[in-house]
Length: 231
Image (cartoon, rainbow, N blue to C red; front, side, top):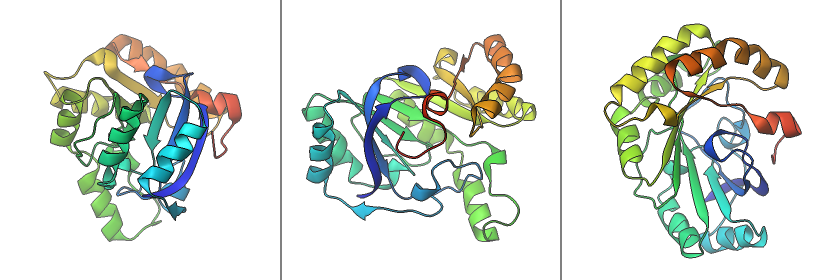
């Protein structure tokens, strides 16, 4: 697998916020969200190929009990099935962070699914029309999301919201997943790259989450470390 970076930090988002974890960031993505905060694993993928044995060895050296497979899009790579099995064989808790556009029969403990809203498409002609259309077609695969939810021991749905006008779209997407979705497992995260943006979005987003029975998802790694790689 092509790995952009592998490091130890704390989970900054969702159910396991604050948990010390090894982050395996694969390089490559089938979407092109305009707000992507890891372009080095998506828009401009970096990194070298590593064997599964090498990746597992690097993780074990970090001496943590939790592993997060992120990207980019980890589900692009069939090798993720073997990687997750080897991590599980070593007693490690594994989270997969995915946009929910591709299904793989993986053995993980927490499936963190982040479906993308219509407003995530590339802006201002930054990519060709072909890529924009591909993004629109791929971003919401309701049958894939549902299957990932029901076949995993635990899941969370994490929506990135930039504008109040997107709240209705989130609710409509959640409704499409009924009766399988638990509102308490729906996390709403503000689009932000700084604490100032986080705070500005929180003022209107958190009250709506409370009203809908959703979880408000802060981005604590921005508060702890700032917007820097390897965190």
